[in-house]
Image (cartoon, rainbow, N blue to C red; front, side, top):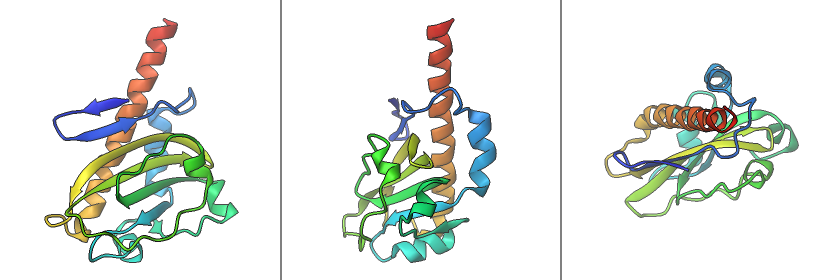
Length: 159
């Protein structure tokens, strides 16, 4: 796991394989559907999905679970640990608890396979819903950094 201490972010790409290159995911990300899970105080996941490009609340039907997608989870810190996170349907929609400090987590899912995840704390009192697309872009960059870091380690081990 790569921990970026200055900005209190975590990135984990231990699941990335040799086909998961930065170039591949960087090109794919703009057109990938974004599944919104969870909510924030004062905003439902449907309202959040309306401000994020390509986003929607997905029901986790088989069709959505076999395609590459990004999963954005808001609320309590998400703990994607293995492929089960991407393979299972989205949990019941949370109403967005009241804690001022929440977490925004981005997970890259290649169908039911987990590729990488990145997360940052989110101060809901100072982050309007309209700012979430910028936060998501930052998490996308962090996930790509994690994939690049994983690829560099693989080359160092092999080389």
